[in-house]
Image (tube, rainbow, N blue to C red):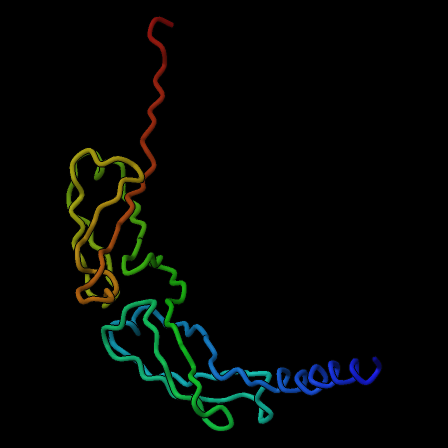
Length: 182
């Protein structure tokens, strides 16, 4: 009986070190870019910290072509001792003080005067390329209404560009009058 038990325990003992030594070859990581870099393209040095790497961190050069859409994934082959594995990098947009990113669309706030909201007109804002864009304000526009400027957002995954969504804000004029008869 004891010899039989030793035979059953032997494979368990020899199998456990093999499982612990298995190396995970693929790693996923996000790379954050400025909004302008999606249009112009850029090159980034990406540092990957893999606890399984005895040499410490690994460094790779990532080239992002112009017109890359947010969320695009890049796959780079890993160096030794992880040959055959890949670094999977996903590009994301960094927060910007002027724009908020939602997919390929950009959101921007525009504060106007109440008179402009009542009568309508044209306002100018700076787009992501640095060019001035005309925002046509319709007569009687409401607070928090969103105006769409087509094709002025970030690149889309299947071509073209997203939209720039402009949220109109203003403080309504409040006039207090005295009651008549006093």
